[in-house]
Length: 435
Ligand SMILES: *Cc1c(COP(=O)(O)O)cnc(C)c1O
Image 1 (spheres, helix red, strand yellow):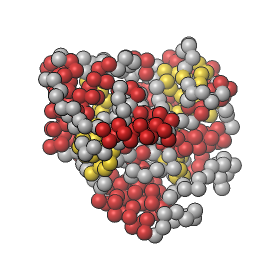
Image 2: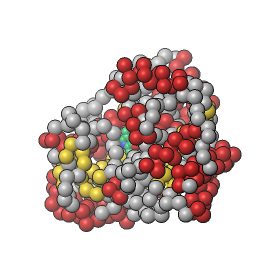
Image 3: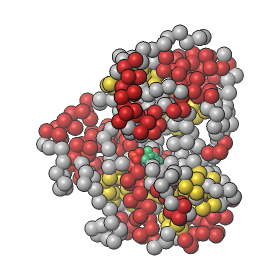
Image 4: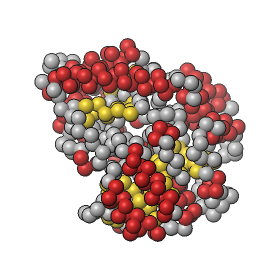
């Protein structure tokens, strides 16, 4: 079926023209610029439940969910009320507030992996601080990362592999000196040989191995659990800290994230996104012995003017209180499976080279059919299929992140009725792309 609906996006287009005079690329974070889907960004005006409305009044079912934080959907009444109540007492004090204790208690009383936590204002900041902590605790300099994992825009994480099995990183951003990049070792995901080779040669220099246990920022590269278990064992045997970056998977695939889902205990964990209920919060945590190194208890310095901000803490408390209710994640999984099965059955019946890859309430649009992709370099970089599908979805009132490397998120507000509508639109869009 051909798409006939063309949306009026004149206000968004005009706002974008103005924004380009203010911001590099017209945006305050690059993926928002629609570079990879040909077109100009849609300026959103409001959100409610699973829907968003743009400045031209077009309504969409939203699977971007602010790139993950909004697991309850937009404008959830409990989050709204708690945020407003906090705001009425003032927006920031630069002193401790009871809301920090409340959020910490909610998390730590349920989390078997960390004894103490420190709140920051973003995921990037949490990763940056936790890397410093890993180095401070171990007294070692190098860190190991995996090709295709994203850890925010931290200097030492903006690196890619050179050529060879185990390589020193080369910088992927101007402004990151090669000397910094060289302190990061890079190996492919799900590759045991490369991992073992790296540990054999460099473990005495390695402070930590940082990984997204469920890599979801460059496609959804589900790892074999045995690979992650092996990584755990290698770290333990060699005095290297295992660092799970759970900024996307934390509170998403289960309250205690991928660590709980996979049954693997890391040494350091970072959180972000969902933890702040839609406001800017990140966090890092570890067992007491490691956290004792953080200032003011210990010598690893880290601070933040707005860290633990009461309004942001309030949003986090309200959201995580809902997430902690019995059955929350089972229900998320049930509705996600309902949606994913519908789309995948259609693609299979029609013989399309397409699959929604899924875990928890995350899905990724894979144009490599049933091939199980576990490494970054297995993704076809052309993205022609994605570009077409994205625009077909927009014209049918379904909003997803404007990049084929990004995943989609299902919130508590996506009911089966909404998911029926979205699955129908997705199937029609696939027919338009592959037909
Ligand atoms: C989003 C993300 C980050 C960066 O968090 P920001 O809040 O955008 O700085 C880091 N690591 C992972 C795994 C993420 O998904």
